[in-house]
Every structure is written in structure tokens, then in C-alpha cells.
Length: 495
Image 1 (spheres, rainbow, N blue to C red):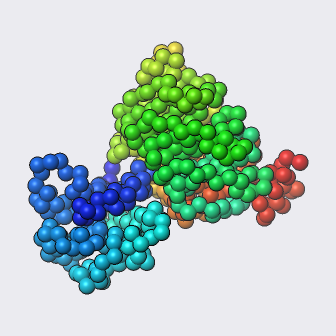
Image 2 (image 1 turned 60 degrees about the horizontal axis):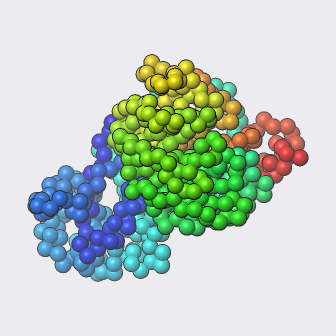
Image 3 (image 1 turned 135 degrees about the vertical axis):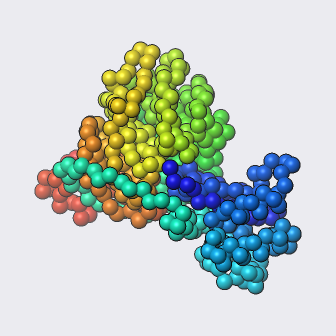
């Protein structure tokens, strides 16, 4: 596993609230695998620790120093004492100094006045009308700098070349650009009429597939939204995010009908049971909660070994499987009726996404080591036993970045994967053959989802867009509609 870029944040105690608000966006990028960093800040030091000594050591080891500028910082003795060290390491090209403008301050006259600062327009955070937009802009800027630093400090991973199968002929149909932040999750409704997308801008959009238009903008989450899923009957949508809540929405009206509270960390993933009577949510707080849909009550609280990034349920509702971790990863699973743990499978790499095939034959996991691992499931199911062995793993290689999302086609014969390498790959199941690669996003792909009946694939990306991809090998009457919209595609296939 490659070493992380070491980052130190330096700020005044009076600016702690501003730093913590920015840190939400930085942490969100870390948990998505978009920032491969070790982040140090003085606010996390335990009482009794020598702050100046700790900061001096951190700066000595740092690849990147975030200077959160305000008058509060410039008058601090600790800032004065570290300036010479920062200048020396910057001149020696050992450490990159990145000024971040928190409050209006005459920073151009400081030692850092000639450096490029964030936000890019040199507008301090406190002067922005919407500070979340400023924080996202800063976090994106930090990510760009980290990308530039990584070739100097991190080894390049060599990827195996995949076997290629006959392409399915997917092509880009339409790009939807309404969201103002990265699109973390996309999901089609069971009847295929709706597409839901959620974003770090705190919103959820319900798209009408028959027209290709945004029907509802769902507002209510107070921070980044990470996951959306439809109930099996399509009447409800569940969403989850950084604000530690799950919200239930009525699809026909776009109204929030329930807020589920109980997690103490960001909620990464949410999924309905096959009968729609309960749903499961996975969180950074190392728990999975099972909720009764009708009442919003917690019916089970499962402790996990590490932070949970993804959760799925087998189609019979008997098993829950989760993936997560940080530097290393873990797959865990439980028998729903008894609550017994059935899987504890440790990985040398973080698991970012989990998907169970529709017929329960396979579990796919998208990993930080750029691979997808496909495990046979049905043959391993027993009344009180469910286990995986390394010999059962099919390794799918071909991506050149973290695999952040995996999804099965409705018939289970094709697996889609989205990666930080900006591409989507389609894979034949079972087997280890790559069918084709879809190129069009300009940044990391965070989510992929197949339409339940049409040859359509949706993807969400850090580039703030939702893209719709479709098959070319349709009858001539439907093929002609690809130059117009995906709504027309729907009509051509459903006369």
C-alpha cells in the first residue's frame, strides 16, 4: 500500500469553527478515497502534549502545510516561531505551503504573499454568501495540490492488462449538470421511471426518466449527501449523509416524511430490505442500524470492526454484507433472523463498495487497490455458515484508480465499476473479462447504477455531473433517438 501525503493544518484557536467546517469536506474526500493523506492538526492533540514540539515534528515530516490565514493566526507566537522553518523547507522544495484565506487579512505583505492561495479567487471564506461553496472549492484545491505532490512521494502501481470480451456498445447519451457539488450516488427506481441523484451540495434530485427533466429538488440534509436508494415498491426514497441522519421521502410528492436518527457518525450507505419493511444503514461510527420503515424505530444495532462505507442485502433478505475500512479493509456479514455474524474477511486494502448479484450468486467489492474482487456466494451459503476463501476470489484488474462503485445488471450477467481514474468499466459475469470502458467524465466516478429493464447505465462523478449511457445495438427505430434524449429512448422502447 502506498504511503499517504502528510498534511499539517495550522490555524488559530479562534478559527477552530471555520477549520472544522472545512474539515468536513476534506474528511469526505478522504473517506471516498479522493484524498490519500495523513492529516495532522493541533486540535486533535491530547491534553498534556507539548504543542510546539508536536507541531515542529509534524512540519519537519510534512509534504504539505495548510496555513489557514487570519489576523488571529498572524499575531500568534507559535506562528512566528515556525515561519523560519516553513520558509526553509519550502525553499528546499521539501514542503509545499498552501495559504487558505479564512478571514480578510493583509496576507500579500507576508512571506506567503507570492504563493497561490485558496479559494482561487482570493476571497476569504467569511465573505462568501454560501460558505459551503467556499469550503468545497478549497477542498478541491487541496486535492489538486495533493495530486501534484503524489508523483514525487508515491510509487506508481503497475496494473495487469485485462482480458477483453466483445463490447456491448454503450455510448454517452446525455450529461445532466444541475448539481453544484460532486455527485456521490445515483439510483433508478424499481419501475425505471425515476432516477435519483444526490450530491455533496446537500441536495437530492429526482429525474423523470420519461422526459429527462428534474422533477423534484429534495432539500433537508444539512451537509453532504452520500447515498440514495428506492424502496422495492418505488413509493419511497431513502437518503443518508454527513449529518448522521437517514431521511425518507415520498416519491410522488417529493416530501420528507421521516428523519431517522441514531448514528453518531456520517452515514455512508443505505439500502431497503427486499420486502421494504426495513432498511439498513452503515456509518463511520462502526455500526450498521436496521430501521423499521413504517415507524422509523431502530430494530437492530450491529457493531462492526471498522467504518462502514457500503452495505447491501441479499435478495432473499436473509443476509447483510458490508465493506469498509481505512488503510486496510474488511468485509463483514450477518444473518438477519438471528443477528449472528457470519463473515469477517480482512483485506489489505479498503473496500469502498459492495454489491450482491440479483440471484445471490456473487458478491462484488470495489477496492482501493484498483481491483474488483468477485466472490462466489450461493455455493457458500449454509444455514449457519457463510465464508469466503481466497481461492474463490476472481480478481478483475484494469482500473488505474480506486474503484468507488460496483453494480450488477438486472440479469446479473454484467458488472459495472466506477473508478477514480475517471472511467466506467463493464465486466462479464462470471469470469474476468472486461467488456468495454466508458470514457466521458472529467473526474473520479463515484457511483454507477443500471436501469432495471432498459439498456441504460447512470453514473455520478466528482465532476458534478450525472451521465446516462445506452446501448447502440437497438433496432433502427430506437437507435435514431440517441442523438436526442434518453427520455425519447424510453419512449422508443416503450411504445
